[in-house]
Every structure is written in structure tokens, then in C-alpha cells.
Length: 71
Image (tube, rainbow, N blue to C red; front, side):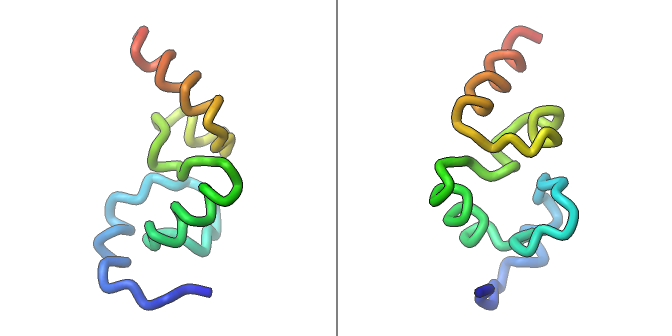
């Protein structure tokens, strides 16, 4: 259940999540808790192309940033 967040509008201005209809868009605390419970990281931790795959796994995080470093 969403709580009122005084930073929600500001957070939305830099939230990089591209998942359509995400109920946690701009609610960073809820997003982080949600993904960590699933052994994942939120989309904002990933480079743009990797974020669009919706694979939020730790393994994909490492893979994405290793590829990013080579470019």
C-alpha cells in the first residue's frame, strides 16, 4: 500500500523506470523494498538499454555495467 511521499513529484522527474503503469513510479522507498524482496534491483540502477529488458536481477546488473564499461 502506497504511503504519501512528499518527494514523489520530484522523484518522478528523474525516475528512469520504463515499465508501463508501475505503481511505484516516483516512490523510491517502495520500489527499492519491492525489488530487494525479489532479489532484484530497481530499474534506476541499470543503464538505459538494460533497464528496458525488465530483467532486474543482480546478474543482469553486473553484466550490464561490464558492457557499459567496455563502450
